[in-house]
Image (cartoon, rainbow, N blue to C red; front, side):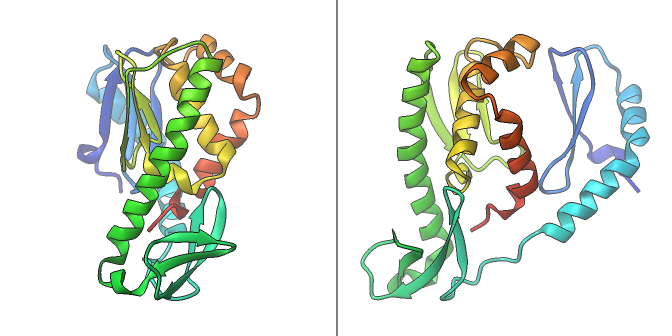
Length: 221
């Protein structure tokens, strides 16, 4: 049974209702400013079977929490690396291993996340600069977050934000999200003109959207 009081409604400049079940099971509805809540509630009820199906899929596919033991797998740019704990001085990749200092095991989750964030800043930052030039646009700042509902965002004054967990996805997926947000520096909605701009620089963008939909739950630490 869906609790309508827990539905997250986002009002924005658009012409239709869009429903999405987020990775944590939250129901999100994006709606035009003028649509009253009773109509949104009916819209959610109408799609209740789809919502429950997606929630079940999310629950069944939810990965187990990391234990930070030798052999455990971590994603980096779409590839899996096996954790190897030892007498190391820093976290680094070597062949198919993610080397981790044994002395830092007591705060492994925090250290690995910090390593991912640092890697994301360097990798994504350089790509944003590159594609901003290619797309002949500009941005004000870049920040990083762990917002579960978005892989990236662009404010009205062109401040970009990216989910640092993107560093776990394949390069083509990172590239797609960057192009998507840079396109928003020019087109402030998801109009036909917006998607045409995205397609001009990333013709296979639908494949990357599918990858995020199918694998987003695997990007855990």
